Length: 161
Length: 390
Image (cartoon, rainbow over all chains, first blue to last red):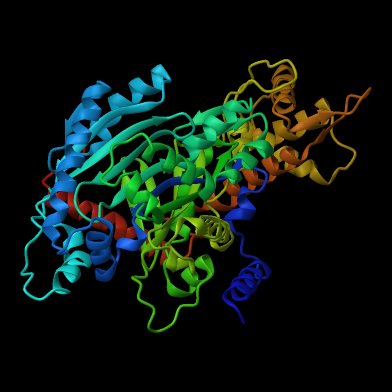
């Protein structure tokens, strides 16, 4: 018997035994019954940068580096940080540094409320924080694997943060 | 290493953020809210609604609003994501994208909710707290198996537990299954919210990529429905008590909306009135002012004037407990009136009076002994606390 059928059987047995369910009590007392997605939190990932071989291909064939060193990620991170600073500057977007243990939603609430009142879509604020870890989470995985693919690469880590 | 949180105000989704990390492999996080999206779509389509926190309290077209909520899927979220990637600074550029190095989305945490707005907010809190008390065993493996529709085996890695969290006066009940949980709470004191929180789509037999959101949502919605079918409702879970409140408290019932006095439980005149009505229950022909007044006066044992009878008939009629037969001076009890007469008299005569005289015969000796022990214990406690009797 499948789990679904077991569930139906159990519910039917409970009903037959005279047990009242919450659904039965609520019947007739509900003015609106709505099913909807609420919080949606997603991970964005680059699918072909997930294993060591893909990282080596990215660094060598795509970026044209002779040696697939993790140090090559540092300039990309630097350029990104500079681009964020320029972006905030050009569009007059407030940049807020999050303190440790600070509730980000509370910090950003005034900016979002102001945007809601104005009704104008856009970036309302940029928050940033420095990662507490001295090591990129990614470096424990794919990139470290990449560094191991060439003998003598050592254990240099990206300083891209 | 830095992470940047781009807080957005989106035309379709309202508040949202996209977090981009500056370190390889440049992980991204995206947060949006389905209810906020649905509100904006409803507004665009001209569907009237009243907000309830981040949800809905009422709408003039529930079917269309549900259809709007059903439309939110991976395509809409994917378009939102790519639209903002085109506007934000990124570690990867167009050349990387052309070579196939670009972000895709997978589900990190998804909450699928069902909101039931109740017609009796005054009773909602008592109902929900009684429901929680009656269902503390929901976290047991067999109940979890029913709710999540998953087979629980001896090697299933899950902490089976029911957790009741109280913040202020708000109670939330949580039932856990592996990395996910289903929670139930009262939203703003007027709506019952059931929410399946999926922290790992694998818990419901789904894959992580965003394209599987529809399948995940369908399974989580089914879990929400099964929770309400699985929860047992005990005697405390009564939502229909406005009838009692209407009878026992002053009200403005009646066709003209006149203020009507309360029929308070325990008031000798009201108890005599209920007793007389219960005696008359078998008289299918009904009763008149004269016949009922005689019964009430006999039960009350004190003078009971015709004016008092007229006033009481008016109270009974305006509260919907009796109705007058057209063209006659005869009244009959309504269904609510039958319940009023029976429960007022039975609770008073069979429960309250015997229990309040439980310290003397004919109360059972065991009950009298128990009361004596309680009385003695309280006296001892007062003596030890050195409090003299007032």
